[in-house]
Length: 129
Image (cartoon, one colour):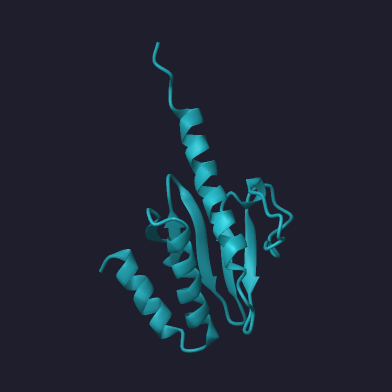
C-alpha cells in the first residue's frame, strides 16, 4: 500500500471527530498545495512534504496535533499555533472536538512552509562559476 492508502485507512479507523478532522485537514493541505506529497513519518503518522517536510498529523486521545517542522520560522498572524511554542523549530496546532478550522489562515501557513522549504533548497544549491 502507498502512504495515501494507509492514511485513508487511518482516517477510517478514527471513528470519532478526529477522523473527520484529519480528513478535513488533509483536504485543506492539498487545496493549499496540490503538489504536496503524502508520506508516513515518525511511527507511521501522516505527513505532508514539498521540498522537505511541511507537517505531521498525530491523532492523540483527546486532540489531533498538526505539527509544522519549521513552524517557528513561519508567519502566524492569526495565531493558529497553540502548542509546542517554546522550541526553536517546531510549532503545532492542537485541534479538539468541536473546533473550527480557519482554512484561509491554515492554507497561508502551509504555503509559507513550502516557500520556506524552497528557500532553504536554493540556499543549499551551489552556484556554478
